[in-house]
Length: 514
Image (tube, rainbow, N blue to C red):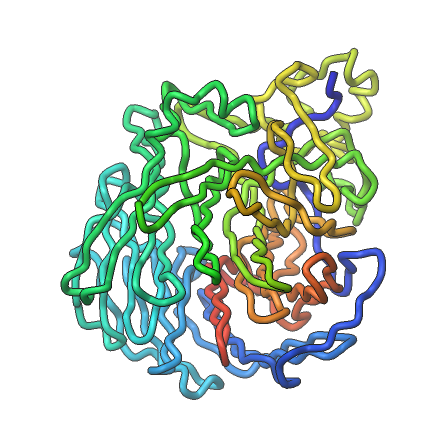
């Protein structure tokens, strides 16, 4: 009998300046000059440009300039992309259904050049990507469950082409050579589940130019007859009357730099999908495995009511539910880094989260239920009500070293670094992060990340304690992560999308905490 609760998303906790992510500090010798990169922040109210310095002991982020949109907390700056050739930044304004173009040639004073109005192409802009002067924008349909679009522009905002994508294209990216554009089409259901489109991946071939783009679709219909088997290995399939293809909702895409198939996390259902681009085929669904927060080194800060930083072990399993994934290479291997936001299903027809203090706990599994359900303990923690408690449906697994993920249901939180085996059928966990804790009930969500040489940039939202801003994760080698640093001078709220490049990183923030 498993005596752990299963959480439906990231666990309560906090990230604090200078908190270490390993039991010891590892020396870091950068492969770049001391000034590693320039960072441009695009805040909803405020955007800031920062320099980023790395040495063996510290990382410092220094504000250089700002850009203001003048609107608070309406998604007016969410996803950003940078074009080095034109020195321009493109960011999505979901509130106005536009993409804003900024001149970043002077990073101390980024200025608006133009705005691309997307209202003629669909009901809402979700993502933007740029490759050598070509801008790709993912736009959902006026009816979210209908097929969306990818719209192409030049860096001046001139229209080039529009192609049809799947339902709710949530993320768009170019392959490393720029020959193809990929979108992760979530296919989210309507609130009452009366309409539930299939999740899919749109593959746009630009080999003959953007005007002659061709489109193919990778879907999950070949897995529809494997529903029971997929659930048995830990893939969370429980949508109302949904097939496998309907229940899987691709969230993000990481394209391997060594031309291996891209991987897509399906945040709410918990597998990684491996896609063969050439044949537009999903070749595998890889469960993410579990993380047991009762084990040493896996502690969490489970309460937002104890007025303290209290990272401790609890009888809880936390789902990974990655919101973003990035790939990088080291020592001849391709690694994945996931930002595990956690996101329970919340629809009119299906609500899966409940607080621990609102549910009955099995007294055989939890003889100390009264203590666990106190607000200062686990009482305030949101967990999933889909997986039973102390039933055979609950699984847990301890992942250490190169151990491959066993066939169990998924649970974990925070950040994971993963490696896919050559067969594309299993993941190996290459790192254990100590003392890293994300996700208070109203706060931190690791949102997304990009990699550049040995440096990983990640952005953390902590609405409860107001400690928001860029976080730097430095990998001294693929299995060892250094101390986390964040900018003490930035108080950015909900910064979900950094883009790593040379010489800039662009970051969009949905709102600013003053």
